[in-house]
Image 1 (cartoon, rainbow, N blue to C red):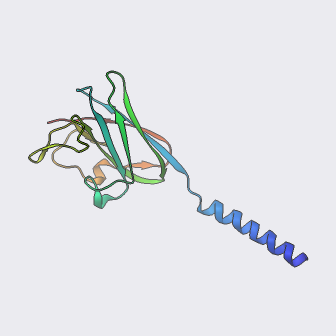
Image 2 (cartoon, rainbow, N blue to C red):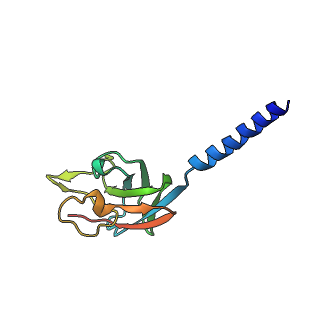
Image 3 (tube, rainbow, N blue to C red):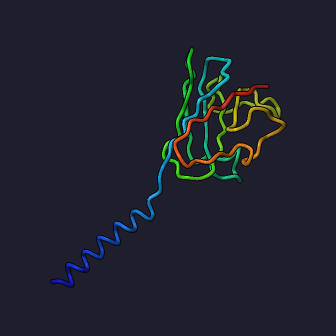
Length: 144
């Protein structure tokens, strides 16, 4: 009986140790969109930690925010693990759920984390930021 109780105690202790050693904190990144000129449509955003798929590939998470007639527009990415991430977003003015292009140039407002001016498509390294706590990030919309 003592062996049985010891076995159960060891199993319970190992269960707690494995739970604590493999548990990772999850964080929320709140994005505040700045520079909205046209108060219509929706903002579509994607966050990724994959440099190879940025900026065109699918993200780790996506979010959508309705553009309001006035006031601040924001959206959230919740449940993110610690790491390096980058965000790309665009304002869908005509509700077709895609970024319209005019040749090689975006025809609708768009933005990237950590980028305020462009000289061509930005890299993941230019846009990345560390997620190791809950964060609020401002992204300004750009238009051509």
